[in-house]
Image 1 (spheres, helix red, strand yellow):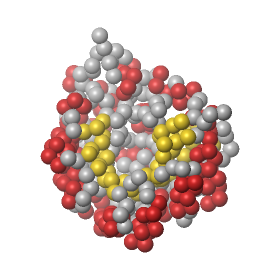
Image 2: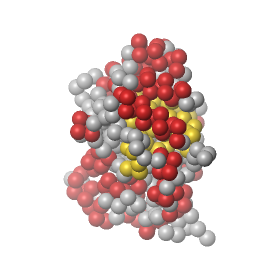
Image 3: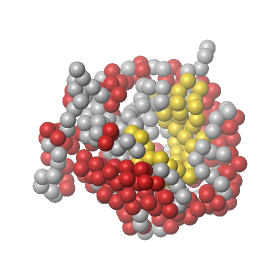
Length: 367
């Protein structure tokens, strides 16, 4: 039987992380020890089974902090034996000169590292204060670059840093990095608990993307908005230098996730388990109706919208985490159109008005 082809598999190597990011989508972030991780042999067996069952374009090694996993390079060897390359998502804080030099011969597609502001104070307000995460991350980036490993940047765009995105991108340029993912905050997993603090409004996203557009146009930066950004919130055509993504679940661009206990999920943000990479038929899981029919259900608000099939209401994992409905409306939209949710946010923030009313969200109605 021919193996199914899918875009990528994100392997969450460990539940442990050296940072305490408020925007973390790992559901176990507040209790990584309870989440647990596979033993070394079990992890390698699960990776081997998954890569044997499904033909992936590449793998993504993530976590937790993937470089904290003792078997990290054994997993890279396994990936190479399957004829694949890896991209790595790291906070950079545990990368030493020796580790970077050991990594270089594996030729990873790139290592993506996050900086959430142009200075230590703003960055560490997002990832944890008091442990010099800023300095350690900058050192990790330098070690990778000196070893010849390609570095891509990331900025998690939040309510706290949206209006300083231009300065943050200028910092990335100063470090010699021109490929940056703009991962607008999505309140899935642990991050749902920080929704009042971190969820950016439409106005804040417009400001952030306006600054990003200027940086991309003036300095040839390659910027991708990696989290779904519904067109009713942002007119993506107004930012031609930015590349916008939509939820890829159920499409050929889907990146499945394999959790630290071997659980296969729709993506790194979703908590629903589709199968076990240790015991179940992985090929059957990635072609199951749970995946292929995922896009068939969209929020009622989206009925009549020309973008309904491509947008599907934004991030379903965030809708599940915040509003309790896995096929409901992404909170990035709901904050402007759901009166109850808007009121709850306002109370949590201790603010008055300030939300864009429904009339400002112009759905593109199909004719």
